[in-house]
Every structure is written in C-alpha cells, then in structure tokens.
Length: 99
Image (cartoon, rainbow, N blue to C red):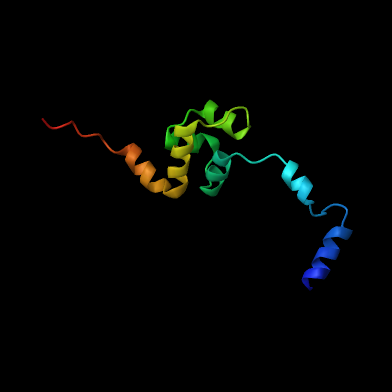
C-alpha cells in the first residue's frame, strides 16, 4: 500500500482513526518516569526498589498526582541515560573519608 492508501484505510476504519493535531495536543502526557520504567521493562515495584524511589512517590508521578521536583528530574535523566551506572552507584559501598 502507498502512504496515501494507508492513510485512507486508517481514516475509513471507525475503530482506529488517527488522532488530529488538536487531539494529540489535548491528550494527557505520559509522565517521564513511566516512560523510563517501561523502557527498562520494570514493574513499579522493581523500578522503585532498584533506584530507591519510594513506591508511593513513583505511583504519584506516573498517575500525574505529583510531579518530580528539579532534583528528581535530574535523577530520572541520569537513570534514562545510563541505568546500569546508576544501579552500580547505588549498590556501591561508600568509602570512609581519608584524613
């Protein structure tokens, strides 16, 4: 099928019509935490435990009841950028400061 035929078929299907720009703009945005968690294929419980984020906080972020503050946004960005490095850093045993 050509692109035009695909578009025509989609518009003709009442159960799968593409959204308009206005509908896309008005649609609720998926919270970033949920996108990151799903990309990592983790449950809320697994993500919460692995990255030491309280489960209730994570759920509030994902449900749009609360938004991550600036430091939490930076933390989520670090997780998205290199989740294994963040995991390793959290599991590392801190060294005592040397005098």
